[in-house]
Image (cartoon, rainbow, N blue to C red; front, top):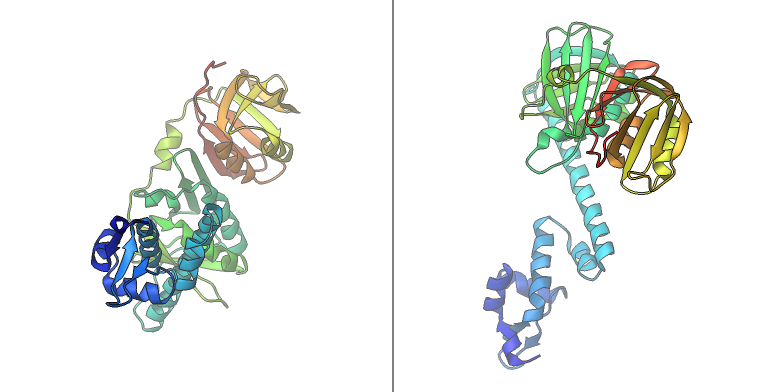
Length: 357
């Protein structure tokens, strides 16, 4: 290291975004000692090679990582550092969810959150199952928070739950124990609902009430749960479903063997070939012999290609031993339904075939 590689603390502070006082603190804590300290003046100098470590340190502190965690990340390899970051973010999200629930409870206790509009009274285990099934079609994308939400429509004798990640759409309609006081629709934060699901499942009957900027899940005998609503516009599921083409082929397939075939299938994409009395799970381009299942098939033979990450979750949420596939063409969405429960419907979007059947 030459003298030209060194810079005084002020210049180093400007390059890294850390203040001089912060650099002295991190030096004293052993996280970022200067490369050289003048024995007479005590002036600190830092090396150019230390800039990236200092910038990483600053970013870690900006996400509220404690000093011990910062040191562990800085001294870890790439994989271990990524694991430590994920664990820290999970703690932040858990703490934020806990803080929101406590704040909602305090607001309610202070009288700032009166009883809301009752939109449904639903059996807790049924509601929890539906929420967890439909939420498999959510996604977290920057700038599109609505894709991480669950759209709720209440009216008459039905409560409809819908989610989409743009490649799948999952919807389930429940018959509430008591009808809504009036119609309502809104998109509820998926993470809040996911966190509330275990308590909802343990509650025999749940009242769903709408309040400004959220809903309350009233859980008799347990702590009520507040879930935020999202302001963004949710895609119109009725319009989407109504725009689908005519079904040309119906196939009823055993669910578990089909899921096992997808788990063992190589590659990121899979081709479904439906013909005669069977369905084959194969590789695009016939690079894999595939696995064939006996199926009940009505209509034209078809070959449809999917991303495994789209098809597998859609199949896994089906209830019962068999799943029904409604096929419209090699480039059209496929509707998946539980053979014994028609109230859960998932659309899986195919990817383009190089040589369509």
